[in-house]
Image (cartoon, rainbow, N blue to C red):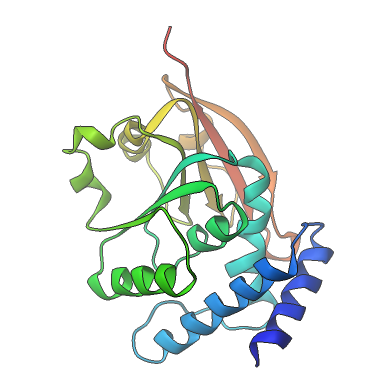
Length: 215
């Protein structure tokens, strides 16, 4: 599918989801999907296709998530893989600086190449497990928001991840099923804030956990 036709499809999918999307951003998102498909023929970035459900997962979910994130400041995305939700979020929120964390070298190379070709500024890629970043104090409490998709998070993981988030910031957890007790029963400095529906046909949700302000 050509870039222009894909951009038109994305505009229609966004309108259906009641997401405001400009043509320029839709074209950038279409270019991202094209790069993902090109790299996917060489390395396994994602199993998602460019059918409607695949585009909803790759693109529309992050565009809905953007409603609940700060428009400026910094975002850290854990397990960035093929770049969703991080790269679509960056395209829609260009003033938000982005740090992507991906443990696999070839996926990290894709993320760097995609950010460069899309002309995205203030983007960094850390090729390592997020646990390795815990030993870097300069990254502690430096991000306004953190996103992570689809992984099962236990209380210990949440405690570790909150180290990257400033007091008052949020952790946005993209999930495709119900909210686990580990998320509802978080302990200070984290508090469960809300669950927001994303794409109805995918039964996906955004769980927002807030980090308490220092007192």
